[in-house]
Image (cartoon, rainbow, N blue to C red; front, side, top):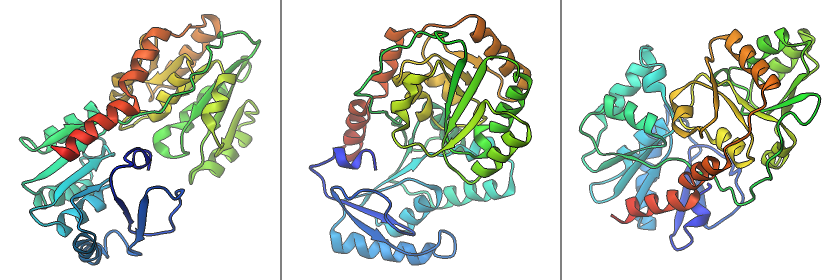
Length: 325
């Protein structure tokens, strides 16, 4: 939904398995199949096959595991088929029986003309390891960073103000953040966590139970990026990510970064980023204390390099080449 408005010369049909359409109306026609991912796979495939015929579709582009499978069942040999991979399950959970079944189904439904697209080099490596000698392309996600914020001098306030952005799920590792701030309760450090999610109330109650009044779960904050300039440090403790859009938000705001040492973040992090082990509470505590005593200035030149590398212009060029080749 970020790149469709940028492809104004093409005709788009957005098909979802369930509604309602939560996006603003743009240059596309919306179709809701009103079906379920597993039980309704063949029903959805037949419906999409009908849409392809009626709308004279040239390219089918899907973005999740089940829509990838459905797209293969729905398309004929003449249709260009692109399956985007936004998940790392084939690496992080590859030993689980359910994920083994996913991989098997992915292999069995492979198509000769299928193009698998990875959102990062990390995901591309997973796909190349899982599906060797298949057609795999890398088109990294992007950020539209037209309004760069002026650099805020770290440590300019008596209190170190930390910001984290991301949905409240287990992968974001907010339980470790709570334990770290419990140990830091006497230090002049606070954190605001912006993002909704199913575990929002759970984390709010945990922070209250632990008496952490300097840890605030803010929920969904409209235009969150506009607020980042008010902080001194961007933190992400994720244990698993496929890319790192939230980290790019921090880079866009020119904030110093304290981020978990995982492949997706190593891939996009600018020079001067601080890394910590997301499974080690004490490592996070040590790094927060280090930054409190030794504020790090952002390497703005390298920040600009990263933002240029992951710009919408670069993404669109790669996507158009894929569509038109």
